[in-house]
Amino acid sequence: MKISLNLQALTEKKKESLITAIYIGTVFILLAIVYYANLPNNLWNNIVNFFSSFTLAEIPGAGVSLPAPADPHAFVSLYSAVFEFLLGLGILEIGILALRIYLQSPVARKAETVANIVFWLGASYLAIAYLVKMTIMTEWFMFWAAIILLGGISLLVRAFVILAKRHG
Image (tube, rainbow, N blue to C red):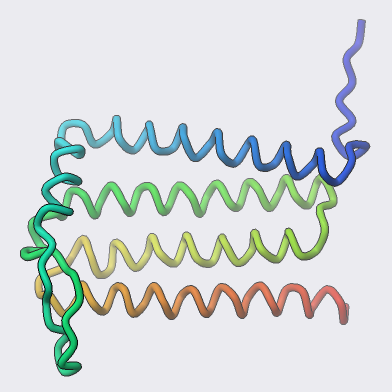
């Protein structure tokens, strides 16, 4: 008895449900791997201590105070775990893009996935560049400003992918 999987014959709704199930399942596996890999660093206590340490800190030169950890440099092992998770999400999105191309997903879905790749890989870079090597409070706020900028860039990438397909 030969079993044949013709995934391309699935309806669009079933294809998207399959991709969603693969994505969510992989995110849970990624969370478990990152947590397990960081058990020696007592990750759970770091998370609890991180959120317990929040205080209002003034953004340099802005005269505005926003929540920030009292000593952001104290949580380098937590930031490393965040980097690992973000990098894993970026790699997962690359796999999802390959699956979307294979299943001939709509252009809008492919564009969304490309934007997600830019965001998650960019966020992983920012985590390693600003958080893991953080020495002053200013870098905490620079990280969040860069994340907002990255969100805008990923939206532009999404739009350009859709425009390129329509005009290509």
